[in-house]
Figure 1: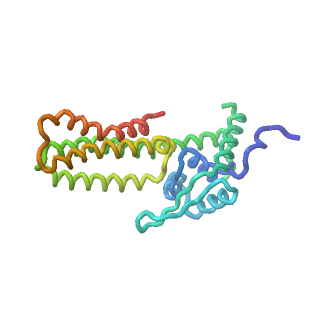
Figure 2: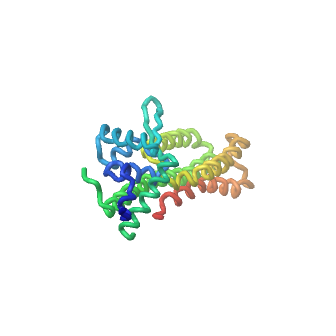
Length: 98
Length: 140
């Protein structure tokens, strides 16, 4: 049985775009889709794909609304997502000794 | 895209957190502008009644521009959530205090006995937003 902490890394989070999405949502209470897209420098479709994975995992809540006549999609972490990200960063620190 | 190493993952988390902090600082800059503008607005309203119309129009334009900038920020950071209700409550009370005084005296200039309290109310009207600006713009 392997006990290396890297096996404890959550594979849903430990992927380039999803990690960045989770990091942004962990640092903020609510982030707009557009802000994420610009911060992560990814296309709409790639971001949507990864948001959907995180949403299906129960980590991210997606809210759609309007500001004036413009549609606005906002994202936030669920309690489960917050807990998963806290565990994930704790494992990273254990591995790197940070 | 390859799976990041743990060190790269931590670096990416810090990079993204930096973007969120930058968004908070932009919000803080808007609070700073409001905190400076509010006392000037009320000073003109209370002590220079002849300027009321242009100052009111300028204030409306100023707040519209700031609202537009605020909506473009796109991220609501943790620090903003922590202070938002206290600042909004304080701002409501302290911003409306000079408004009450202005309502009581109407278009007439304030009597001289009200100069110091009136000036104090003008200064106080900007304090909640200046506090918010300080909280949001400080590095840590």
